Length: 208
Image (cartoon, rainbow, N blue to C red; front, side, top):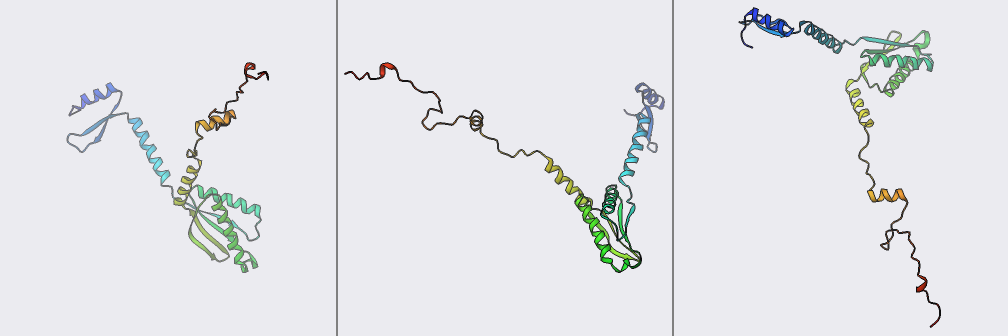
């Protein structure tokens, strides 16, 4: 709009029902804009909140089991692990040994492997950030959801749900024949059901 006196700019802002906001105070002359300042601040806060959500730091969560855990409890632990991974957290799967249980580390590896396999089968591709290892009486592994594989799986599911438009359609004549049950004739009569009747005059009486 060009260069205006402050009084004129304020008057034009009021006529429009807007605020006069200085956006470049260091310029000569200063640069201002007409805008709804309340709405402007609201949109700024909304963008900041969305940015914080995208920049959510992954938290390390833990699921702990014992070697003698039952199948029902394994399923429960697996559902909990799935929820934590879907929320964007990292997961530490731990088996806690007591007494002489520590002499059978293969049981702990088997439990951790079963949980990891169950998560993969539930559609959670895993990225191992720290392989299975022992820390005192605890055996654990640290995993996170593999975002790249998860996105690829989501694209595959979306393609699988799309309707299949590549199936050939029957030709109109074939479709019509299949509908009315008529059979095309080979003698050019086009499948006619009419029967010709001989005229009585055309039948010989047997007299000369």
